Length: 440
Image 1 (cartoon, rainbow, N blue to C red):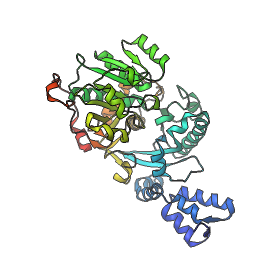
Image 2: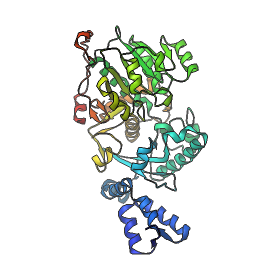
Image 3: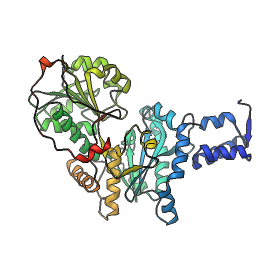
Image 4: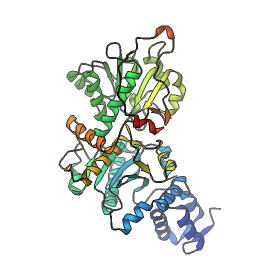
């Protein structure tokens, strides 16, 4: 089979390029084959036959809004979310064995009112960015993706997932190279949503600040710091856990919290807020048994991408854990081109996207209204910036989604395993937008 070849000028090759590969991918495949010897082997074709390529081609066919924009002379893209892939599952789903020559490729397309937004994924997974060589390659891929977006009229660009600090704390080199684009890491929006979701989950679980002990994984990170400060301000007993002992020590000097570098030293907690996906402080079924109270389930609010408590580990301990996906946003106006086929590729649900994506679209909407947001440092996560993003969320209709765990509705926040050990429940009322129920 591998010895069969299809000449580049044959009808079979042309049909393949049209039917199964997004135009830009097909062109690159043709160019690469031309350089290799003017012919494409069957093994090269099958390498491109993955669901992601077929999905991308269908999306490009049904995206009539972009066609109208091009015909009427409007920019094809208003906002772009540039992200690495999460893991090998993403890589297999989207690309199989294919590696784009450009270093980046098309992801889901969003429509929200008069905003066209695109995901542009770089050909790197989270683990690749742990090495200096992997980060250098990811930087080159990222810059190429920004150039692609700028050529199509993008006004706002997001450094998503593990690319947030790829260009340093302030992204100065990016801002200098692309002065006409607003760059954001999206964490002001994610923090706003996360704090609302934590408050809701703790209240529903009956965990008030008088009786509850909360663990925060990665308390010295961007999100972890904001979460820790918010919990301390509310009077919770907080224990911060992470592998960076020096960062923990510095944080403990600023905030009245306990710290530890392992689950074995954490002690018993009522809930864990996961703000890191580090393998050095990752929840497992065994760790859950160590840190949860006897007769109680452990509440886990997981904002990490990839998830801190993996789906495989969750299945092993689901009877003693209530887990909630966190940091996402819901908007009834938000549409995915190709609907469920697209949002399920991201393991999300209808009308739901990541909080950082929501911030990017909200900032794009602000620019379209003529608001001046270009002078704000969106790499900085602080109360002033969060207040600005909350205002934009309110104007655009972004709210927290219905609580879910790996895409499935969280049916109960009751932490009791044994009725005779029920703790006093908190009757605090939490105002939550009814619109989020539509995310079902």
